[in-house]
Structure formats: structure tokens, C-alpha cells
Length: 573
Image (cartoon, rainbow, N blue to C red; front, side, top):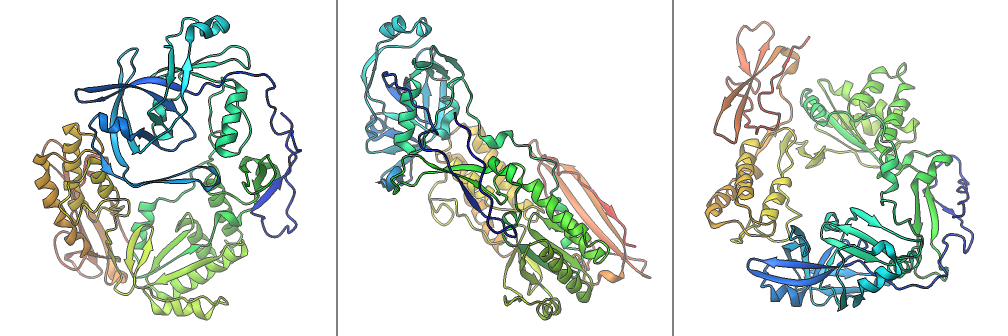
């Protein structure tokens, strides 16, 4: 393999170029085999099982496909029924095919040699797969290639696969063991479904060329791992989201903003840009080889990006620790990645800190924007001291680290969105599947446990569904439907719920704050924990609830996942 020249440097040293083309000499990027040889795709005999019905067929193992597909003819022969899930299949050169009648189902497949059974999840039916026909005479191949002798590979003639296994079920197709001969001879790979043959290096490279337009081969005995896996992620410099949200609720005046395209404002050393190299094939170009590019700005997806971004952000703040000590510390303590959230008791103080934080970021090439606050005075300070034309105002609803905050009334609220659901199982009589039940639960983001007393019932229901043994795309058993219907009624309660952002009405008078937690065992699969909060005001002997009344401030039920029994105590100076 020929070495790739170093990336050309940006013409403007003051601003990071996003992408640089790395020119590769024509004809040097890939060495192609000049030897002839047969092409063998990774086709393997399997059994598909549906209750008492068993079908013997062939599977095509394709790491170039993101989906697992089954021919509709076999789908109907087995009497399978799935969840309607229309597809749009897309290949190179913008070739597409609509599969409006596609259904998604979980299948049981078996290795015919040893009978071991496995689940294939998220299998989509299609009208016709039209995969290539393949024949193997293992006796003749074993004579020609001795390394194949003795392997449990069955011969077959004119086999057309009726199921394609893609990367979403790749644990069944990944090679566990490899038998290889010379460089251009067929390779046998053992999977959980049995042994499969694949073609010579030339054949595999040619197939890759047809599918994606990208060239390049990989030694067959080298396990495929993304380059990102070899990059050291560095120490975790991320502030605790839980702690940030708790501190955001302390002060009466709150403000938040975010840094625009934070990662892309950081320039990468030229020697390190090749860790962000990628290939780009232009289908409209006459050039047969792909172009090779590197990113000169920090990319969000690489392992080390969070550590580098946080380090640079804090390093820039350290330069202002003498000039703006409070703001410089706020940059380091009250940022969650690019989001800045802060609260205090005086609007002048909060406004000045926000202004200084903005100036500190600007000195490092970062632009903080989308300011929002519950105080008009703070926003007025930012406006009067800003040269930026963008508006700064009190918005109707602001998203703060995933929580919905209404600055006008200074409360948290819950907006129930279930974008992942492909069927409306909440406002209809449709029976949800186990997958849809989990999607509903995971769509309810609640980092502070405000609605735990509501979601715990859905978690318990999901446990019961799991114990029933049904598949991911199977509807809930009739015995559990009443519990689902009862829980759906709770959603209206959640949608109307509001929680004050600030703990106190007059925090400058609070002298002592105490949180008391008690643990009460409930039944065999949950534990209950109640948290009681009290505040003692200056010169007042009595205790009062944190919301201005005696008793419980927030009572939350937790599961046994480590949050039960949590207690804390803090004292104001």
C-alpha cells in the first residue's frame, strides 16, 4: 500500500478549515489481484421456525446492509404476522424502492448442523429479494483447496437466499473462526449459524466497488474494528448533569445559553488530522477512485472530542481567573458540554456574570447564544452590553438539559412527545408491542425524578411483559392490557404538571436546609423512598417545608437501581 501524503494546510491560519482533500496518486490507492477466481458470497443454510412450521432456506450475510430482510413469499409460507412498517430501500446512484406493505417481525432461526436457535430482531418483509443464485461443491473445493477439508460445509446447487442478514443482527453473522489458504483462495468463516464460504480478495473488493463505489481491501484474518476504537478518549471532564440541575434550582434568578458549534471552533494539529480521515466518492465524477479528506476542525463523533473540547473551554477560562474570577469559575463549574446554566439571588450579579462569561468565550473563539432568563433585568443587561444583533428575550418554553423550563412562570413542565412511535398506541385502542412500551417509557426524560411516582407503574408493567416471554414486536397479553389502559390515563396528569424551578421564595432569609430520606420496603419488586425537606429561617425557631408549608416537599418513589435511600444535608452560610 502506498503512503498517503499529508493534508494540505488551510490558507487562513486564523480559522479552522472544515475539510481538506488529501490527494492520492491515481492507480496507487488499491492493488487489485490479477488472478482469476470464482466469487462466493457468504451464503449459509438455515432453518426459520414459527411455532410448528419449519422452513429450510438460505441466508445471505451482508455487512453492507443496515437492515435484515426476508422475502415475502417465505414470510407468508410461515404464516408470520408482524407490525406494519413501510420501508424505502436505497442503493447507490440514488436507486430507491418503496416497500409500503412491509411488516416488521422477530424471527426464530436455527443452525441446521447443531440445532442451536437464535432470535433475528427487526426483520422486514419485502416483495422480492432477488439475491444471486449460488452453488457449492464442497468435495471438489476441498480437493483443490486442502484448508477446506473436513469443515462441516454442505454442498448445494442453485441456492437462492430468501433472507438477508444485515448489521442489525450481525452477532449471528460475525466470524468466530476463520480458515484460509493462500492469498487468493476461498475463505471459510464459522458463525453462530454455521460455516460459510466467501470469495477471494479480488472478488470481495469487486463487490465492495459495486455496492459503494469505495475501493480498498482488508486482510481476511484481521477483525474489522473502526479506527475510532483505537483513539484514547482521555479523562472524563464532564460536569454532573444531576448536580448542575440541582444548583440551577437554588437561586431566584436563572439564566441559560449555549455555545454555537462548540466542537467545530477547535482546530486540530495537522499531524492529528489523519485520525479524522474519510473517503468521499462522487458518483457524478469521472474519477474512478474516491477522494480522501481529513477534518481540520474537531469532530463531535470521535472518542477524544469531549475531553479535548472541555479542556480547551476550561483552559481558555483560566486565562481570565484574575480579571473575572467568578465568571471564569462559572465557565468551569456550570457548563454541561456547550450548555451554560446558572442561578443566583441578585439580578445584577447574574447579569454581570453572564456578560463576562460571554466575553471569556468570545476571547477563545466561542460564541454563546440563545440566552434565556426569568428576569427581564438580566436580559436587559445582556442587550445593553452586547454588540450582537440577535434578540435576547424571555421565551415561552426553554429546554434546559432536556427539561422544559417556562421562564415566564419560572416552572418546569413536561411536554410528552413520542416521536419514535410509528403507531399511535396512546390515543387509540391499538394494543402496543413490547418494543412500543419501551419506547414510551424511554421517551419520558426525567433526570430529577419529578414523575417517578408515575413512571414506576409503567416500569413494573414492562417487567411483567418481559417475564411473559413475548417477542419485541408481539402485542401485550390480554391479561396485562387493563394495566396499560389505566396507565395511559396518567398521561393527562403528567402533561399538566408544573414544578417550581427555585426551591425558595426568599432564599436570602434561609439559615439552615435539611433533607431527610426514609426507605420503606414495599413488595418484592420495588422499594419506596420518600424525601422530606425543611428550611429554618433566620431568627425564626420553627421549621417550615421548602415550599412554604409543613410536610413533604417532594415525595418520589424510586426503583432498586441505586437511587433508593439517597439522603443529603446542606447548610447555608
